Length: 568
Image (tube, rainbow, N blue to C red; front, side, top):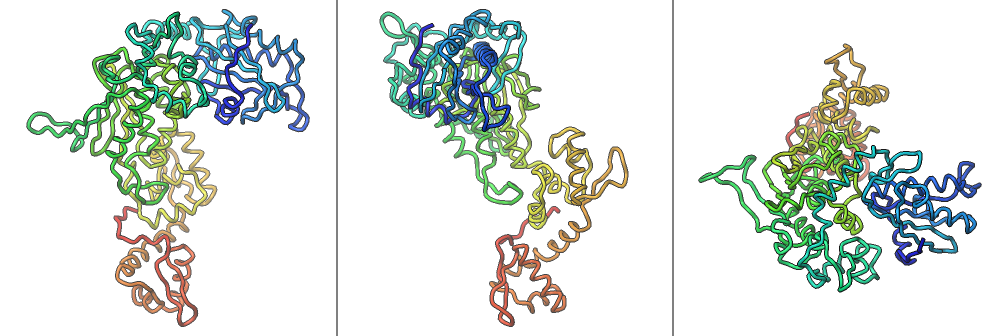
C-alpha cells in the first residue's frame, strides 16, 4: 500500500462543509451508544466492516471518497487506534473484498486528529464483501444489489460509455482552460493546477508524451466549435404559440439559435434563455396569490441539467430540445433510461441510481450545478406540488426521455378570504391543499387526486383534520363519503366573503373607513359594526387609527387591492 496526497488540509476543510452524497461519505470511528458524553473507540471489527461496505458500494457504482474520523455533520473527531489497527483498516479493500479493490489512501492530521481517506475507483466487475453480498451506492445510502445486475450495468458502460473513450485527435491545447478555471473555483480544488484537477476527475489520462483526452473532457470543456467533438451535443429552444404545434401555412413555432457551447458553458446559458422565456404570472403559491414564475425554478433547472448529464451522447443525430407551450414546458433528452431505473421508480420517487455518464455527473455535482444522485427528481415533484401544479409528466418516446412541466394549477384559484383562513390553521401543505381545492368538503378520492397519495395515507391525514375539528366525520361510510368543513370554519368563511369584496370596492374609492360608513354599507347596528370592525382588524384586513370618536380604519396588510374571481 502506498499513501497518496489526495487532498490538502484546506481542501479537506472545504470538503467537510459539504453534504454526503453519491460520491462522498463521512464515518465516525467512535461508539456513542452509551451517550454522547461517554464515547469510546469503535470496535475494530465494526470499523473494518464499515470500510468493506462503503468501499465496495462506491466501487460497484461510480467510485467515490470514504473518509473515516469525521461525523456526518463534518465535525473532525479522529480516532484512538494504535498503528497496527490503522494499517489493518487500510488493508481492508484488498483483504476483505472480492475481487480486491486498489484504492488510493491518505492519512491526514487536522486539529491534532487523524482522518483516514480512501479514494475508491470504479471497478470493472461487481465487488463482494466477504460473506455479506454486493453493496451499491445510491445517493447518500447503500443498498444491496444482485451481482448480475451490477455486472450488467458495468458491461453496458464499457460497451456504450461514450464519455470514457479517448478522442484520438484531441490534444491538451483543445481544452478551454478559462472554462476549467471557472469550474475549479466552485470545487474544493481551487488551488490545484488544471492538469491535476482534470486528472483527478478522470477526464484526462497521463501518457508518455502528454495526456490522452476523454470525450467527457471535450463535452465539458472543449474549445469551440463543439461540432468538432460531437455534431449534436448542444441544446435547442422552441416557443409554440398555443398548446399544440401546427405546420405549413399555420406554423406557430419560433426556433431560437442553438446553444453549441461545451456543457460547462451551455448550462448557464440554457438557464438564462429559459428564465427569459418562463413568463411571470400570478399563480397560487404558498396559499397566497403573488407574482411567481410559471414553473418553480428548481424544477425547470433540474429538468435541463439532467438532460445534459444523462443524455445518450452516442446519439449524434439530435440535440436536447426544450419546448415552451402556453400550458406546459417539455424537455427532451436523447436516450432512454438506464436499467434498473424505470418510469415507475421515478414516478414513485424511489431513490435509485444508474448513471450513463458518471464522469460528467461527478464534475457537475462537485461544481454545484447538479443535485446529488437520487435527490433531483423527488424534489422536482415536491416543488411542483408545493406550487399547487401538476406533478411532472415523465415518458419515453422514440428513444428519448421527456419531462413535461404543466403551468396550470391542479384547481382554480380559491377566494383570497378562504386562503387567509386556511393559512391560519396548523395543517400540512397537503391538508391545506385539499381545503383550498374543495372549500365545502371532499371525499377520500378527492384528497388522493389533489395530493397524489394512496388511500391509506389520505385516510390518516383526513382523520387528523377531523381530530382538530377542521372537518366533520363523514355521515356516510365507504366510497363517496364526504368530509365537510366544520360549522365554525364555514361561518367564518361566509362572514369574510360577505364583507371583504364590499370593503375592497369601498377602499378602491376611499382612503379611510368609519363606523358610520360600515353601518351604511352592511346595514348593521353600531355595536355590531364595532364588534365586526374589531374582528376584521384582528384578522389583518383593517388597521385601527385614532381613538374614541376620532377612531377610523384603513386598509390592512391582508386586504387584497383588486377584485379577484372567487371560486370558493
